[in-house]
Image (tube, rainbow, N blue to C red; front, side, top):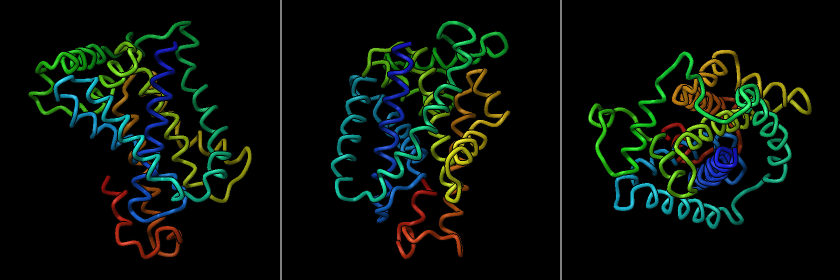
Length: 256
């Protein structure tokens, strides 16, 4: 349990810092709900780019820590509305964390999700283990996207958690980050309406079904699709938010 939730905290914290730093680099000073998805996307890219360096997962973990620390330093004096965003995100993230923990609570232990009807995690664990050893894998030779696996290896070597706990933490973190990203579509909602709306957007039946079988890639794709749609809304026509208006790099978050 500790390893799983430590992974959740690490992924969510680093994603929020790195994602908002990317927003600030693009010129926006206000907090953006695109940050959770942007940060996770960048973490996967950084992990994949560094996990094959000497030191494998430990090198990747150290680079991620350095990038996250640099993001915090860069954001000093460059984030407006952080207090308001924290107040809005805290209850949503907490309830999403509880909801995403239900499969483990029902089972009475933390382990591999969906083993009774989806054995794919065996291949993902093998690929992550080979990456952690600096070895080649069949999935690697096939061009399979191993960014999430690389991030799990970084958690494994950086935090000392097991690969199973790393994948579990990444899966839960994706659900939490999606619930916060959904707040970008609920600017006019408050209180229980905002909370319920964020959860219904982030965890509909299809996403919950993928989550229950441990299909982390599909839930990450849903998060990125959600962020892209909200990004289009923020940047388009009359809905264009003042924070993005006139910025030459305003399309970069969509590319990320």
